[in-house]
Image 1 (cartoon, rainbow, N blue to C red):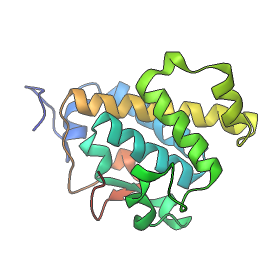
Image 2 (image 1 turned 90 degrees about the vertical axis):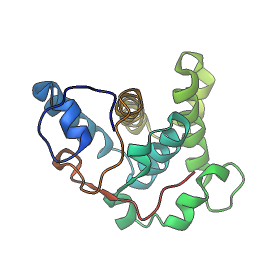
Image 3 (image 1 turned 135 degrees about the vertical axis):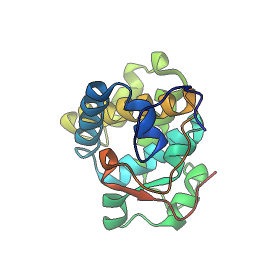
Length: 171
């Protein structure tokens, strides 16, 4: 149960807590959904789940991005995510972007020009901009869910319509 003492009405804890500021919630979730849709769905889902593991967002680990599954992301690959650096299931492009996503979560201020160049060697400049924007909104939501102790839910809030409950969480 969330740390927030007074919540509003809503089907999920996320809706009840963030719904206290409905205008902010609507704007943020619109930005969130728009940002992640501009990135390769498998890449964004791998990074989102890796970030959720590092941040400890139970909320995000309980979700799967439906377009990623439609694009071919399997739960077998998701289970290998903690070994992405050595697992043959991951491409060099995925490894490079996952490394960057980890650094973004752990200490974004330490990202160097060389780090950016590495990612731009696998993403064109426009894709790189959208990728970083997606990392930013995912990071914001996940850290908010952890800080407020927002737990996983059975029903997916309408603000996250392109997600579904995960069959099982990853570690």
